[in-house]
Each structure stands twice: as C-alpha cells, then as structure tokens.
Amino acid sequence: MAHEQKKFSPEELAALHALPDDALTDSWEAAAIVRLKYTTLAWLRCHGGGPAFVRGGPKLIRYRMGDLREYMQSKEMGDGMRRSVNAMLAARGITTVPKIGG
Image (cartoon, rainbow, N blue to C red; front, side, top):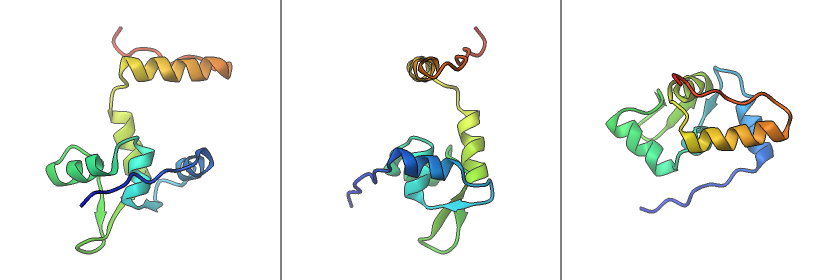
C-alpha cells in the first residue's frame, strides 16, 4: 500500500512544535516533526531505532511530543543539515550551531 506524504505548512509545523511534552501526535505529524518519511517512521517502529510510541489499539499509534524531542536531540546533526541550519540562523542574526567533537 503506497502512502503519499502528508504536507504541513510552516504554520502547522510551528503549532506542532509548540505542543507540550505530554501531547500526543499521530504518525503523519510525528514524521513531519522528526523530518522523516511516514514509511521510514513506520519501518523504525517495527524494527527499532525510532522514537518511543504509544499503541492505543492494533492500528492506533501515537507519539508523545516529549519522546519526539528526545529522539531528535539524540541524533547527531549531519554536516549538510548543520550548514542549512546555520545559514537560516545567520539570516535571522542568531548564533550558529557548533559541530560536536570538532
């Protein structure tokens, strides 16, 4: 079964990121928050390595915002993403993100 990636506007993503740690999101929202494809998040859920999730039934999966934030903080930012973030922050006059361990 093919899944078409759900698109979120910047305002919708900002609203999701503003949710408290105990708020629950669905798989589409969680994938957008952690910047993964829906199918990648589903694969990680089945095979391990993804964010913690809550199963509310056989087909009802939810993710706590606190768990999504913890997952994102545990992943090291790649050089390409770091350059993109630094460029965005520099355009807003904010300090850049340092490289860990170097």
